[in-house]
Image (cartoon, rainbow, N blue to C red; front, side):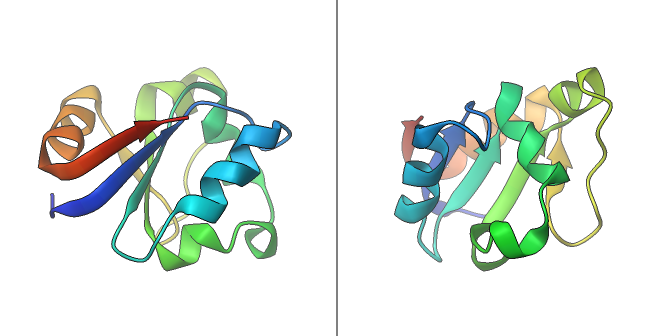
Length: 97
């Protein structure tokens, strides 16, 4: 896992107002980790989620599985709980939304 300026951990669904607020705060040196209902974003059309293209984006594998979702190669990387901890430890800052 590479170092990130800020890791944004997002647990809100795309319909929640905080979801869009988080996306607007993510910069090119940041990472976005989708957990809980945040993983529902992987089912959204890519044009609605340009942040997923400009930042490193991850989704918690067990949360994807619990919702019957899979990630498309290249757009979002599925991570385990262990990898989530590694991402958190590697980031200079962590913000939970």
